[in-house]
Length: 513
Image (cartoon, one colour):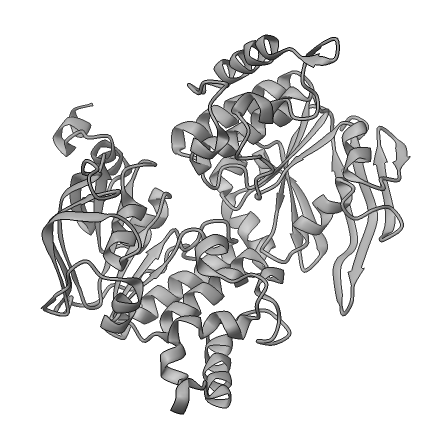
């Protein structure tokens, strides 16, 4: 291998009571795409914070080298001056500004003392077109969806001509087409000599674009492999420290039970007076069953679940029955009281109160069960119940008083699921329950789904990952532009059929193609 462009030597980072990194070694070659893999809590984020100057030199042991010289970053600005740009999972965009203003924030082209708006928009339009984005430069960022916001972050970082580009879960909110565009651009950057550190739980992407893979576990470097000599099962084994024989351990019931949720010809508008966004939605969900919902971004999966939960939209028509009884347009509180619960796809925005404790979050949807005389909460009973779910969900934290915002993504997701299950629901709706969490945490979610259906609960699973949807569902409904594009039994599952239905084609047409 050529001399490293960026190298970490014997890095150790300690926090009070925790060793986050322990003697970590990592080397990035010029023009290389290098994956950093590991479970949540393995030390990936801490390593990135050292490389990017968030944790300054002097706060850790060991050395960082850039092109053979010791780097002593004291800030993010120092790292950027050395050519290191980091794109984190949290957006660094300003919603009130336009796309062009965000791309050139702090480095706008000027004519004398004034900003050259024409030149800014011209350059922004060229960058967007080069990235395959049909977005006007003057569009306010607040009007963009999550996927497009992520792509704007990437465009901005790439335009800085950085020698090292660090991407932390860059495709978590992107469609398959957007992912393909991003990976193509990373290959072009590699050909131009730019090096990339690619952090992702999606190992198929890692193997599609990366040259080498470094695995971290429990804060230590486990191994570095070339992708041509590795396999996904081997990487998973190094990540979790054991052999994983079945990635999708679905245990379907012998026969589904009674109908828990029935939807007939449901049509929903975003607001009263607006045209329908969802139309003609009909399905039944039975006890012990996992019904999967798929579709392209914007097809209506999240909107359907949020409407059933009473958190979005205005019903224009149709009927919904829960437990055999009519279930007209509800509120979230009424839905929970009737035994239907939703675990949102955006756990940080809708699922958790990040500055509060784990225990506060776990019991938040179940407070009526602990409310006693004069509206007072029975704190001892609440604590006991919280501890039960803290243990049952295997949340990795010092205790239930630990702040939810300080947890890894996988453990935050466990809190969200524990909060939902504490309401003792009959129907559990899971919207992207494994987004942004590692393989080990995913397996725990899958085992939880099996336990729920074994106990007679009915589960709706929304996922953007077709292998997950096919592996964990008993039936799948693919949505297309707010309607049902196709419904499939397990024996009919193929990626070709599901994708065809998501794009509005018939299964017969997909087979012919």
